[in-house]
Length: 183
Length: 435
Image (tube, rainbow over all chains, first blue to last red; front, side, top):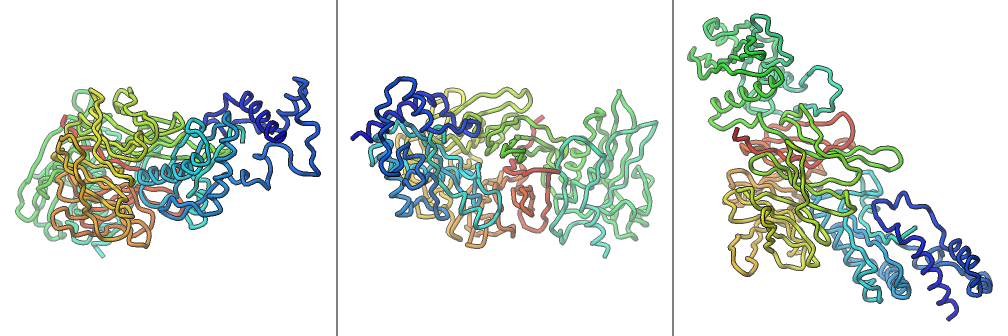
């Protein structure tokens, strides 16, 4: 219970501070703002420190679950087979965790970006990227995320993360990215 | 051996050093059966000093068509500049059947370019003109002459005096990229950048009168369709609905744009009336429907859909009725057929094709359904017909770089166009200009 309040507080603070930084195109320029720091600062500023000071539960991670490498929320890139928009079962589980997190944090909104590899035609790949992002969106919505928390964008093959023209690059480029503001 | 040296002449087009970025053309495929022709360097008279070698441009144009094999200048047995100076018997002996001669004189601050196309076997002139040419338009004049020669000898209109639009991408420092939308002459010269963006640009499409380009820009962080006047640079957004706005294709009358929108939840094809902004939905299917291309009569579209499980081409007639018309599949060979480009005569459709081993450009006869694969690399895409339907320009990848190539529709001649740096992609061959 206490934990949940903490999460809401953190999220709310993060949303306040990062509200202006949702532009996708600018995300490279965003500062790497660690949410725990924000929380600590907020707590200090307001004097409402009760939620954070006593939260050390025997080494368990106490900050934002988005920062917990052990949390399923740490997985924010999901890969696909060629010309497919089907999620692997383990990806579905991680996406469900994102959906639950968004449901619990209605102040948080994410960009769901769909991408394709370079093979085949560009416009078909743009549509394929959208279908991939819509597949992810559906999972998030089923878990309770609101539509207005989700911005679905396809870049097709236009924004590769790997610039090679080989199987490994193609694998890395066929993806959906869940982009949280500030991450 | 002689044939080989004919070809070598066309292999590399030399040009004056220029700081301006431009496309450089090399002919990669052979051109068996190409007609030997001699284009004699034009005589410069009365102090004429044009900045361009008109005969060289004409020869290069003819070589690029794959239908002619111009002699190299060193092989010429004489340098006549007028038909009456030609020793036809000597040229016959040298194996030349067709000869182009000409002369350039100053006129009105520019030049007068005279040329004659001569039938060596009959010792007769086939055609000849004197063309007034402003000094800055010498390349265009040369292309016009090449068009006249091509038409006289083949019976088909030449497409040398046309343009190509394309997208270039440069990877800058720190993961930044620079996208440019550029327009160049069909031989790659005179590149002019008409849009620069840090975000992706896609799918340039010429309006039928050749003065406007529709394209997709991600400058707003997502896909938006613009129409830009190529001459004035003025542009307007024509589609910025929620979701995808892409794949614009002009109707033959230039009044409508077919495009792909996902505003209703899934990629579907719509037709937008550019003046009234009225939108008509054409497809209604949960699959991907995209990449519409107009049939030349304006009564139907060919588009890509994966409604059968994999991307294939479908044809739909535009009935104008209240319900969406029925689409029928037209490609059955291979497991990937997409991005239709319809020949100007409506008899053939070019596409990105895969039968499992990479992606090539293929052409299908729309009457008998016969499919022919024209290229042989693994990442070929974005085919676009020359306005005379004889060549297809497309994008491919060579040693990790995006380049443009053109192939004749019979697959015999192939040539490469490549920029000095960066990737080149998404070529769109302009229509004829009705000036």
